[in-house]
Amino acid sequence: MSRTPFVGQQEYFPGIGQIQYEGPGSDNPLSFKAYDANKVVGGKTMEEHLRFAVCYWHTFCADGADPFGPGTRAHPWHTSDDKMVNARNKLDAAFEFFTKMNVPFYCFHDRDMAPEGNSVAESESNLATLVGLAKERQDATGMKLLWGTANLFSHPRFMNGGATNPNFDVVTYAGAQVKAALDATVALGGQNYVFWGGREGYACLLNTNTAKELDHLGRFLTMARDYGRSIGFKGTFLIEPKPMEPMYHQYDVDSQTVIGFLRQHGLEKDFKLNIEANHATLAGHSSAHDLQMAVDAGMLGSVDANRGNPQNGWDTDQFPMDMYDCVQNMIIVLAAGGLGNGGFNFDAKVRRESTNLEDLFVAHIGGMDAYARALVIADRINSEGKLEAFKASRYSSFTKANGQRFEAGELSLSDLRDMAANGSEPALESGKQEWVESILNDYMFSRCSSKRG
Ligand code: XLS
Ligand code: NI
Ligand code: NI
Image (cartoon, protein in one colour):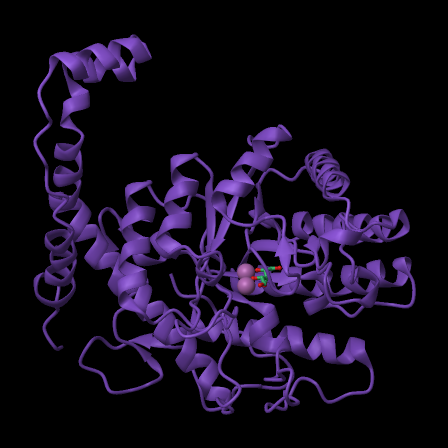
């Protein structure tokens, strides 16, 4: 479907209309070459499969500042001395951008949308005001909220953590913010609510009681779950793993760590995972790895689609353009039956050197086209089933006789010993890595290449 383009009192992206699909032959940088929202792939439209979301923070708040220098982009919605005026203008710019990109969803932190006030009550009221306006714009345009979240990492009070802060008084502030952010998410019909523990971790083990902090985190998440359910939140709570940055060590290290933590605290029925590609790579994994671990546990919730720089170890939040990564991620997401009420959120920012307003569009178009191409390729790979068949054949010894009994828990360690002693040396069976990798290339560059239109 196509959303009604929204333009508020001022047009913030003049000269740019709604981005259209023009196909692979187009040279127009402001058009989709692969993402055709209504195109059906494997029984669902591209829009239904990919459920793209634009994020508020990188796209409308970040101005290119880095630790070595100030911002390089002056936002035309950030011109007043009154923070609430800027917030209203930013909301208009955001809805103009969402609808011109024709994405179905967006995501935000409380503080992206509304400024912090001088008291808890004033912050709540600022947020409620902006949420009311966002609701009006959602109703007018058909835009939906993929997820909301609370920023528990920017304000100096959170320097030692939010829910895991050693000072209980700070934990109460974290609670106040999460409560208001849950209220906002419910008011806007948000389909998920995210926890990213930016400062839930430590800088130095010598001054940290990790057992207490982890216990507090479990308790805090349980309180948030209970409050959310009590106000009618029917969506999924998501944890977004990340091993470090800004802290040296963050508790939500990676998929498997978070899965264990959720199970330990009895939260596995309400919570799933929001996997960010660049966070997985920071943890020393591929993004496909963290996705697969989440799928295996039945806990894949949503994706923060981006990528890091392979030459350094930062969360550079670049737009996902690397087709190998996108294809491998899509193979896993499709095999799992899709993202359910999750989506692909572009937790990605344009580079400091990308200073034209148009670059925001070009970046999102590139990311959407990359995942649209990956969808087509992965659908073909999965439906033709070569990789899956080879995978199954590698485990075929478990489908019969003693292999089957092993899986059913009918054998003991002594049984294994006797079988080995009575059998002969197993034949070496090739894992054929080069063959499976070259299959990927065949699908990416010959089998699925579309004719120039
Ligand atoms: C930061 C995280 C953050 C979350 C939301 O690295 O990716 O942006 O997605 O708090
Ligand atoms: Ni990130
Ligand atoms: Ni993220």
